[in-house]
Image 1 (cartoon, rainbow, N blue to C red):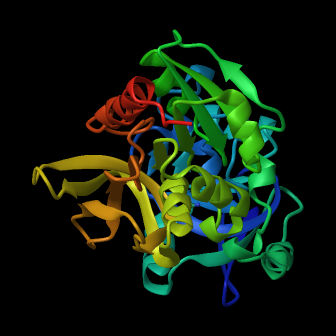
Image 2: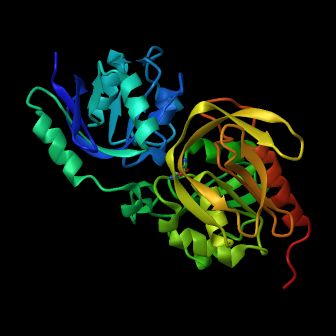
Image 3: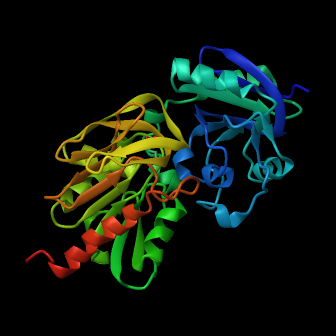
Length: 354
Ligand SMILES: NC(=O)CC[C@H](N)C(=O)O
């Protein structure tokens, strides 16, 4: 049955089966992750993107909300070869259009060859290819979503207690829940602050560590978070994950750029340049740091040499381009959280002199 359409930049229209009805538009991206669909679908970094699963069967172990990374489905639409009823019903209940019975090998090949593309989606009994083309027409590029942080961040500060060993200010640019829980599990209290928090908001928390989260869109559009990094660099230890790494680098004299089609999956090999050790990592990003500014590159992607870890001993900064919190994916880099909290420990022992 053909009751679903995907219009891709250039005007090419694919047909498939509607699994959750509706129209949508966004940047067409793919993940090669073979498990972790609940975590991926609730990762706020996917806001304004249409997520294609390259693994052919998605949903074979159901849907459980304890695995969610945020309180809603984040991509604007979902494409797959085959979605189970559990996942299709969840997406329909969330109002997120979903299409399967697509040849996702073709979609992935197109994105790999052409780079990230805009697309329009129409699914359901009354859907037409014209509807999908009209959505494509209205689609904006990722960098044009200039206030994307507002759509994924908390509105007000929210405090979580993990034992009081450290005080962390987590700037929520679209944070995955696992970043907060990884800090809480290690004894930290965490105050989640909005993406546009001011230096005064951070000072009100009196943190031992400033942590910039992952999130959707172009790091250049997160000016307030960059201003925080500029303000506190050298005064507080700084950590960042994914968008957080990009924001920290951009604030400290570096540059970022959009990649052809990015890294999304759970088996991206990363080498630590000091130890030589390679670990498999979870990734979901379309931008990369091109110049680390005042930071040193400490880890690189084995496939394409892009920077995966940045640091400065002088400024007490450690960042990762990948997702050490996993969920989904390998747990091989959870020690990142021990390393950043060790910086907070040192801060408590030797606070900056007034
Ligand atoms: N997971 C993330 O934080 C993504 C970062 C950024 N939005 C990118 O696509 O590169």
